Length: 183
Image 1 (tube, rainbow, N blue to C red):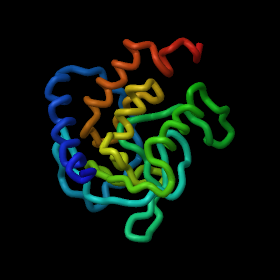
Image 2 (cartoon, rainbow, N blue to C red; image 1 turned 180 degrees about the vertical axis):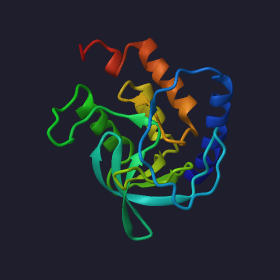
Image 3 (cartoon, rainbow, N blue to C red; image 1 turned 135 degrees about the horizontal axis):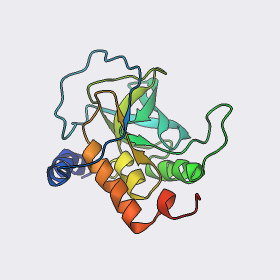
């Protein structure tokens, strides 16, 4: 049943992207290593890996065991407030974003991973869309709840428009970062 739901995620993302024709885009030029990656559509990504969550770092980074190898995953198209960045204070809504990712993809759970054009960032983290055990896109859920902002990293744009639309929903609903709690 969960596998069937995973098959519908790319379709749902494609429909949302088709509806959202114009969206402001936050761009972050990061040094990325494209590595060997297949060309993908800019509207949806297919899950190509599954792995077990072993550790949560913060609201947009987690460790996943893929075929017995632990891989640090940086969620695509979302940036959540910092909680563990060295020499930086914990940012408003950072702990909430970390806690929510822990609910969406708790250690021991199996998540799906989908990759865009560029596979790694300048820190060596694998860039991937994380599909939660119940079939949701973790980045989109965090954005909809106001716990992160939509971003593009390098050429990775698949799914961005859906996450930007989710961010707009959070802004319109005055939740999370847009609730006024962060001053």
